[in-house]
Length: 142
Image 1 (cartoon, rainbow, N blue to C red):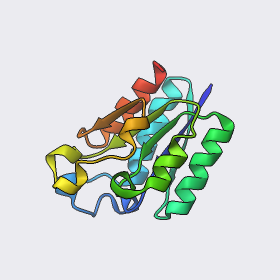
Image 2 (tube, helix red, strand yellow):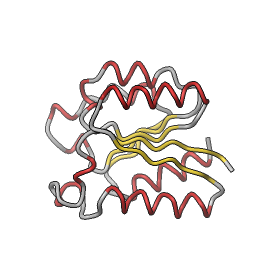
Image 3 (cartoon, rainbow, N blue to C red):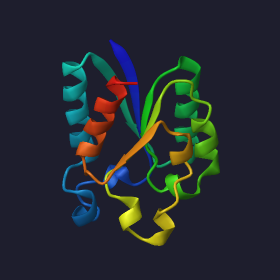
């Protein structure tokens, strides 16, 4: 069984109530449950985490680097401005897939730049909660 770390950044703990017209009506817990179901069916074991704290996200990325764990990450707002998160993610030795529920390029201009995309194996965005499942499917092939 292959381990995959799924990391989620700030405000994603508010899913289900935060701008459902953009982010959908599922809670992050429900998205995590879907990921666990998919993972079990495909011989993956996932550790699904969320934080509003940049330092904690960086610690988790260091942990993934030290353990050579593949990472699926929705950096949320950290996507657009956190050089620290980008630098920690660049230390990963296993695959990294960036995920977003919405399509940042179809939104405000400040969301058009991702500091993570350039170091990720790929980015999946705009498919709502299914973006996570698509990322898990992609991880199976990396």
